[in-house]
Length: 180
Length: 453
Image (tube, rainbow over all chains, first blue to last red; front, side, top):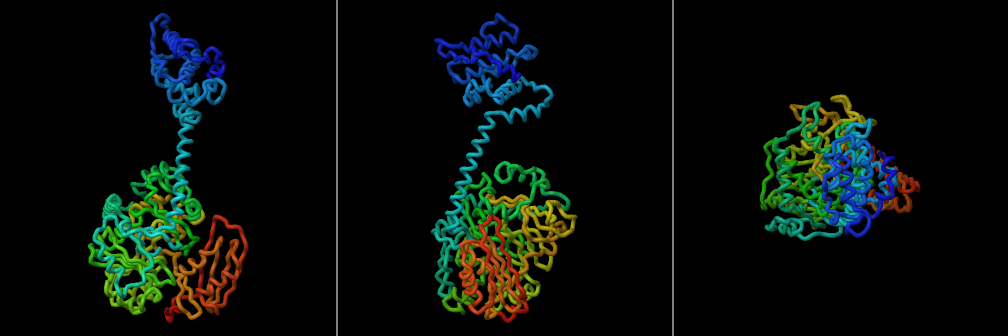
């Protein structure tokens, strides 16, 4: 799957067309993918992705996902998860990663593979659910940035405590009632 | 270190509007020359938290033998999620490494829970009588818990501290060359008086005022260390406290009996540490009853983080407490005892490691080692050891940097007298994080009997 993602053709990486002027029509691509996976080649628009309200990064990631979902594995499984995945599954992570990184960087490709498998409720071969979740956490951009943010907040707090320690040591504290 | 910036009485006692007793204690013509001010800093929210804590003490719901306290899993989870130093901790207590004083001293801010409100933080530098000086962080609530904790001890003998602004409830008596002294009030006790005084005549207008002042306000509870109580017994004021509470070092049984007889009240020996305050109390030799159900005590091997066999001696190690600025997780106290359950109550048996170290000056006057710590804290020492021989001569070894041997010698001579024999060894060494301070002495209580200051 990682290998498949990294083989993504340049066409899928093209600039999304949000205004109907030039570039790739992401919504059409997404709906083609969904039709292919549901086996209903002539169905009218199945998913309204509301492209105008989405970031370019998210539309790009949707396009890359369309390529990823062309892997034969996805033809063998149920397709009920696709609407949720395209409409809600990518909004948080997309702006955090440059689109080409998903197909160039080994770890991002793994993250995307695990993100898709997690969304369709499948585990990579040989992994238990817990192992898959654990491994997904370890490559998750959202989780990593959260840790960095928490670490930054912890550092700022520690600095504030140290600053106030010096100040408070030179200040009156509170009643002492016995010797220690 | 003497704090330099004082507060207003409004900041000291946000809830106490009637402060007439405070003025009376401060302005009394026979009062000491108070050199400081202090309050309990309790506001309405803090007072509520204190009241909630007090209720938990009343039930005295301790853990049972061979069991862990019911609150432990929640506490460990809370430590793991809110305290940086405990991020990697296990939710199984015994799987955690023990914590040493040096670790806290090096980075106290790492032990502050994210639940602690930094603006409420208070800092106290320990004198370093059992180790190097260390900054201990706490808040007004954890500091004020001392009183409900004492009340829970006294309640076992149906002794009650009176509330209201008519009486002095607690008087901490010191007997030192120099210490902070103040008159204060207790919000928890509805404005009752709190005093911290020094028996050193230098702190009074007339030496006789020490008796007069104590007799006039007749504090309900007298606290201090054994040396101070010895000096108080010699001063012999006509006071009738409801109880006396000795701490900081082991109270010898002979002195306890003398005090009980002279002052006609129970005399408790408190085992407490600056890092967590009260741990246990004794009113008979060798048995210290644990005071706080929220402070779990394990007895561990000194060299491994394993529990000793039930009833065997080992290092007292504590987990819990209510200070969000220093929650403890398997903290090694450096003191040794065994743990036994007596009538369902956990007790420390044969507590040792806190025997008083006696020092005398060249006139055979008593020297409190707090004064030595204070004098030496002015130097940048990585550590020191001080030993006094039977003939009063001193062996002093220190290591550090940027200190002259002559200035150390002079500092000790100011405390012990310029004619005292002393051997001073000083090694230049870069300051390390791990400091060591050790006092020892060949002087015993017999040598002290003729000692007067």
